[in-house]
Amino acid sequence: MDADPLAALEGWPSPSAAVGVARAGEVLATRGPVDGPLPLTSVSKLLTAMAVLVAVEEETLDLDESAGPEGSTVAHLLAHASGLDADGARVAPPGKRRIYSNAGFEVLGDLLSRRSQMPFETYVTEAVLHPLRMHHTQASGSPAWGMVGTAADLLALGRELLSPTPEVLSRAMRDRATAVAFPALVGVLPGFGRQEPNDWGLGFELADEKSPHWTGRANSPRTFGHFGRSGTFLWVDPDAGLACACVTNLDFGPWAAVAWPELSDAVLAAFGG
Image 1 (cartoon, one colour):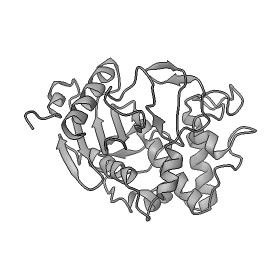
Image 2 (spheres, rainbow, N blue to C red; image 1 turned 120 degrees about the vertical axis):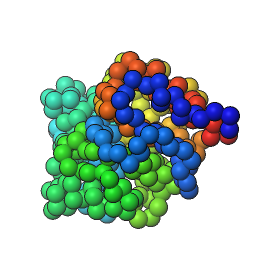
Image 3 (cartoon, helix red, strand yellow; image 1 turned 45 degrees about the vertical axis):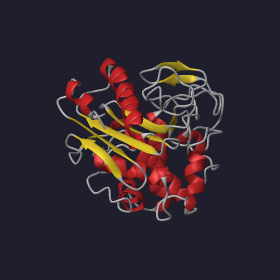
C-alpha cells in the first residue's frame, strides 16, 4: 500500500479524531486514539436498536406490537416511521413519512426497560456491550443520543454486523434489520436534506441511492450504519466486507459532509478489493 488511507485525518479541523477499519475477522488499520471515549450522540441509536432486536429474538418484545402513537409499532419506531417528530409530537400517521425522531427511541428505551424489568442501561450492557467486549462504552443517558464510546468499540460492533455471532443477533435478524423497512417513504436525512426515498432499516440508516450522503461514492447501496452530531459514525458495507468507525470531538458540519465521503472512498480503495 503506497499511502495511508487514514492519513486524511491529519487535515481534519477536529482537535481529536480516531478512525478504524475492519473486516469481520480482523482490524485492518487504525489512526488516532481509538480507545479514547467520546460522545456517540445519535450513533447511540445503533446500540439501542441492537438491544431491542435482541429482546425481539428473546421474545421480550415483538416488532409488530403496539408502541408509541396510535397505530405505531416497535418496527415503526425503529425505522423512524411512527409519525413522531424529534420532540415527540405526532405530525403524521404511522408508516406514511420518514421523520427522524429522537423521541421514538426514548419510547423504545422505556418499553425495553419495562418489559425486561431492568434498567435500560443494564439491558444494553448485558445484551450487547459485554458480549461484544465493548468495555469502553457506557450505555447511560438517552437511548437516542446519550451514550459514550470509542472507535475501537464501534469497530467491534461493525465486525459483529458483518458476521453475526449467535451470542448477540442471528444472521436472519441482522438481514431483516438492514433491509428497507416501510419502503418508499420520503423524508429528510439530517444534515443532507430531503431524500426520495429516505430508506431506513430497523434502526440502521441505509445508503441505497441517497445523494448527497455521508458515506463514499464507492460504498455499495447496501451500506448501513449511522452518524452522530458529535462527528461520529459507523458504516458497514457488506459487499466490500468492511466496517469503518470514527469518533471526533468536533460537531458534524460542512467539514464532515466533505471529509467523511473522501475518507470512505480512500478506505474502500485501499481495502475493498
